[in-house]
Image (cartoon, rainbow, N blue to C red; front, side, top):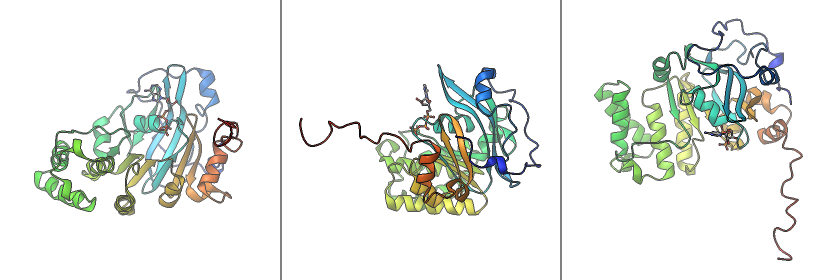
Length: 306
Ligand SMILES: Nc1ncnc2c1ncn2[C@@H]1O[C@H](COP(=O)(O)OP(=O)(O)OP(=O)(O)O)[C@@H](O)[C@H]1O
């Protein structure tokens, strides 16, 4: 299916950062046939309609063997928004976020955050972003407080400031009672919350969260929501991936829908949803799941003859 809306958008004249692939990007451009099938070579998208851009992605590719996990992603994410990256299993969300945050080197393409190239200028980028990746690895033998203190000092924050922010974050996220417990003994939800605290500690401009609500109870989810809403209200940007459409619909004001390594639609939530009653319906239509066999072929499953 063609991209849903961006073609109608006016060109973004303030977009001066669109240079070719960075010197720091690793491999050569993918084969011309593949690039032609995606967006490479086409005019870059004008996603943000003149709004300040927090993250600019150009021609991003990643292959694993024969498979193109990310197949020519061009994307501009507007600053100060709550942005949802949604897509079915295996769509390429994690691979994209890993490349955007400097955790995985792309085969081709460029990512700019605050105008800095993620691969050519990693220190400048890493001071501006916070990341809560999928399968977060933590220093398990530190307590929650020790972990935050250590990471805060690594970020170059003064000790007193780290202490104060650590106390506040532990308190707001409901971890004050567990601050002296070793991280290895934290539950899944507690790990998400300490990971979020670590990602927020240096007050980044852009926060990337891969499935931040997975394993988090409803009370904690509400707390996290509050923290993130306050954060975006101050002009910062949140980019998060999720499968839970209701959550994306209730939290995000801007979404990008990804399937088979490509962006299928992007823009303000209401525009991407279009005439569909819910984002879930729009999503199913966009990713072509409408005619999918929802288990009817499993006629042996359930009651009756065994
Ligand atoms: N390290 C890897 N080696 C080989 N294939 C990989 C690797 N990482 C991802 N892939 C493949 O790339 C594709 C995209 O995976 P990715 O994890 O980015 O998708 P996703 O949209 O985050 O999926 P999910 O919602 O299920 O987490 C998948 O087909 C996956 O099997």
